[in-house]
Length: 98
Picture 1 (cartoon, helix red, strand yellow):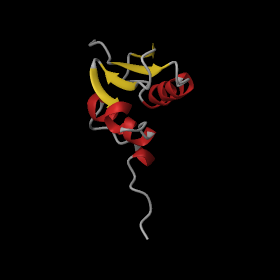
Picture 2 (picture 1 turned 30 degrees about the horizontal axis):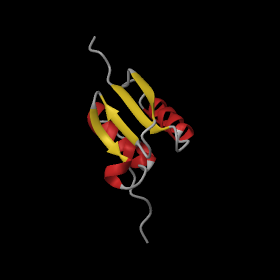
Picture 3 (picture 1 turned 90 degrees about the vertical axis):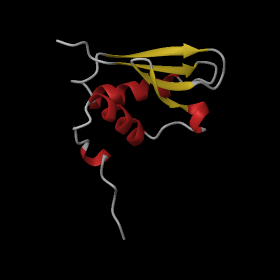
């Protein structure tokens, strides 16, 4: 059995982003319970850091994007790496069109 991928969420402890990092971890673990091996929270003290990596590959950087990820887009990024054939249901829906 191949090892399952690991997510690392590096967050700025000085900015008090632990709750956001924890919520992000909970959402990813709930959605990808079968696909992920672990989610690790890594406190950072350099200021303003919020990064999500999958087995070392950077999926999201607050500094690079200028914002936090929407959970929908983060789940889609993770899905594209760990289970590209998987349908995320409502997360993949485009919403209602008028």
